[in-house]
Image 1 (cartoon, rainbow, N blue to C red):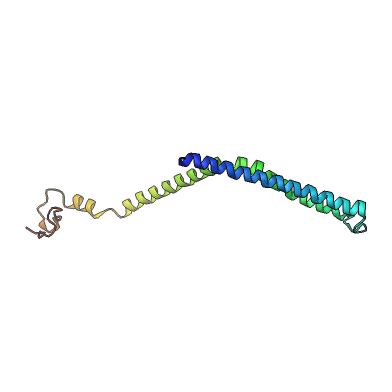
Image 2: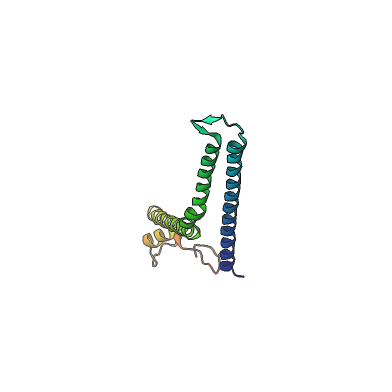
Length: 147
């Protein structure tokens, strides 16, 4: 299996796991909500406990329902819009921006601090008779510089 197929498989595995967890969350939410309603309405557990004018089970169902909606939006909407493709595009944009900054800095450094070789060729020239600045031969680095 090549890298691209492995990445596709890994992405599919993660998405399946996300959807499985969302389904499990829904089952637990539904079970606890039904249990809370049965406890309060049918059995009469803490029947007189009212929070802001509503029975306590209403608040449990509303708060947990809100949390479930956030989980749902995260799995189906946010992950769709901000999935692997979005992440890859963002990374490409940042890498391009960093390369551009590095190239700009490189040009600035070359302009402010030119290499000595450029100065040597500009100031002395190829046909200079000044032996003091003659470069060392790469073939024989131990050879004296002033011959």
